[in-house]
Image 1: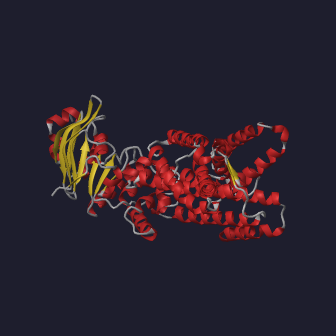
Image 2: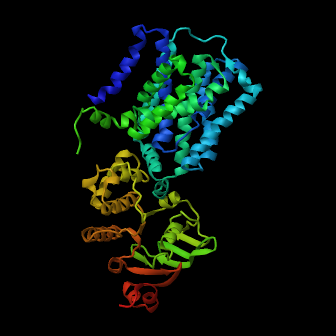
Length: 313
Length: 237
């Protein structure tokens, strides 16, 4: 039965738009799949390879701006930004990696955080390229209806899921986990840690970059504060995977469902104002204390709490 | 030709000479013991040989090629594997996956790596525990897991850093048997050990370090009767 879960999930996702949901609900589904994709990419670098990134906004933003600049400066279709962002973000991720991958643990995390901010400030000030804080707006989005966007992001999410599944069960996956558990031991066992950390970072960045390029096409407007946002991109990405389950295949999906819904719910209560960020903070603390492996990783624990399932000796 | 040549190797930490001017050779298919009091520089010497530290002076030659200053993973590829004194298993992985991760180094594909892992686990008598998470293993088995992981990289030379410390008598016998079998399978072994009975019985030759310097080298019998070694380390009988 368990073997069919991915197929059942895929079937449900494929027929969802045919059920006649409102455009608002479709919008939520699209965001959900986009965040799941970003979550999966973060999970590869930080969950499996253990290099906790606080700067995935850098890759998201570069991807979005690749599509945006292609449109505003070259007059090309921003959709070309999807394939192009793979390349552009790959190059940037490699360069960022040369610097940040020399650092370990909290220092790596801080360096990635800084790199995200560097790109935000750069994008704000390089008016000639990025239009600065005015941002880039598409005159006209390709489609008015949500369905085409939904199927495109679904294809990206499924492709990412399959890629992750393949990578994690391959030699690379084992090397990533070995590096996460003990970098020195991995090194002495013949694993070129610098090389494999770079691969994890570049692949992770590329996927987030594609999601960013998709965002440009879908939303039709970007500015540095949106796509290079520390809280609304980098931190949310971390929370999605933490809540869903670090280093699990389904964690990013579960986390994206919860986080996107929660965000929408909290936002709809106007009187909360900035307090909604505090709610996220409390949620994160709760998860770290009670479910350190996330909902997917600690599912057994949750079942036991509600008196379900067998107690394992 | 000797498998490993350590030529006048020194390692300084600031003004402290942790290893100074040490030279010796490891012959193919022997077990070389390294003994010495705490702080004599045994583990530092291992760290220099295996590439964690660059030697401040001197050269290290494996199989005719200099490996001084190379990275640990390159040295491992060249045919040298090591274990750690303080065991460092990949804690959240099963015993099998621990060994599998290092088996990939030489394997052509996953099936090949799995074969290597099964073979090594049977060799080190850990096959029954393959599903256990490595952080749940008792110390004796964790020490053996270290050896298994190192063996999975198919080394010519195996460096063992106190693989016997803290073992109970039954585990001790098992480990001694495994190391004898490793030698039989054609792998050269270099071993740091404090357990005198063990090191005297399994080593073909022994090198003695004190204060970072080599004070003696010879067969276990020669070492046992060497006056300098008795004064520095073994003590009067």
